[in-house]
Length: 268
Image 1 (cartoon, rainbow, N blue to C red):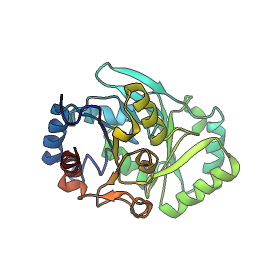
Image 2 (image 1 turned 120 degrees about the vertical axis):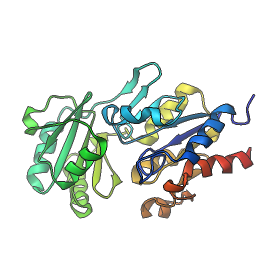
Image 3 (image 1 turned 45 degrees about the vertical axis):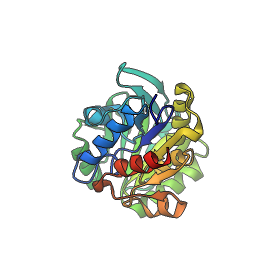
Image 4 (image 1 turned 90 degrees about the vertical axis):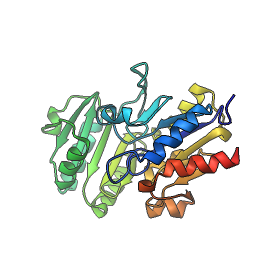
C-alpha cells in the first residue's frame, strides 16, 4: 500500500508538464516516479490530438489513459486503443466555411482521424505546425475529409473573440469554443471539453472526485480544474486562470508537477 493509492493526478501538457524549453523538467520526472511508486496514477489532458501528442508520450511515466484533443477523445497508449472519440457536428464544414468567409483574417486546422488539414494558414498556423512537428495538408475546406474530431481557429486574440461570438450567434449549441492560448481557439463537439472527458476518465478508473487533482495553465483547463479537489496552476498561467481562483504553484520551467507532488506528499 502506498500513500497515494486511489489518487489520480491529471496535468495539462504544454506550458505545464512540458516547459518553455521544450522538455519535461527533471524535477517533474522525479516527482512523477515517486507518485507512481507510492500507488498514485498520473496522466495528461492535452489540447493536442493523437498525432501531435504521440511523439511526446514517452517523455513522462504515464500510467493511465490520456485525454486528447481538448476533451474530444481518451486514448490508452499502453493498449494502443482509442477508448472514447467524439466528432464535430456534421454541419461543421458549412459552418466553418461561413466563419472563414465572415472573418477573412482567420486560419484553421481540421483534424480527421490522425490527419491534419489546413485552410488559409497564417503565421500562427505555421508556428503551431513547426512546434508540433507534424505533417499536414493545405486545401479548401470542401476538399477536407470528414468527420472532424477538432478544429483550431488561429489568429490574434481580438479576431478569435470575434470568431467565438460569431459561432455563438450562428451555430448555437453545436460547439465548445475555448482558448488554449491567446492565438488558438479550440473547437470540439458541444459538451466535449477537458472537464467532461476527465469526468469520464475517473468514472472508468473508479476514482472519487475527492481523489482527483488537476493542473493547467489556460482557459481550456478550467473545466477539468473545476472537478479537482484542489485546482492547481503554474505561475505562468493565463490571467483568466488566476482570476478563476486556481492555487498557484511555481513556474512550469521550475517543475510545477514536482511542486504539486511535494504539496500532496505533506497532505497525505
